[in-house]
Length: 159
Image 1 (tube, rainbow, N blue to C red):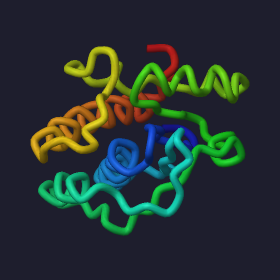
Image 2 (cartoon, one colour):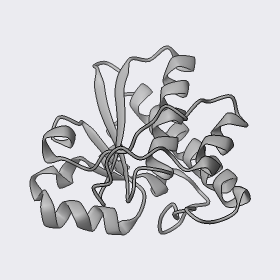
Image 3 (cartoon, helix red, strand yellow):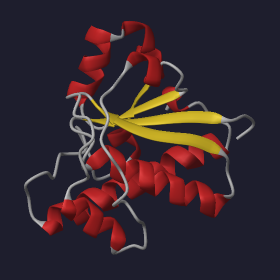
């Protein structure tokens, strides 16, 4: 990475997938000794909620702490400073096309970075811990590949 990068991970509620992706990215950036700003937000505008207990547990199993996270909604001012807006599902791409078309060129379908996640990284909310583990694994693979691209100075939008 030749310059400082700002990444926003976006899902629907910001209580499962995007905070998990944010926490995984922070850990991986630290492992790689890379400097980037990483946050997460949700399209539903939920503010101040703790992450799902299952999301906390799934990350704790791999040594990553998530319990301090509080949800926040997507705010154009917040994501407008991002270099990469990594979204979980096609409906999140649609969200930006409708509400912030000037940011669409920064939107990256995160599922395209995980071989097993064709068509999106599904929401595990309300499902078993196993669903959260599967989500964690998809997110981890996707984040790794995204960071590989950034580390090799390749533009993620051109994959």
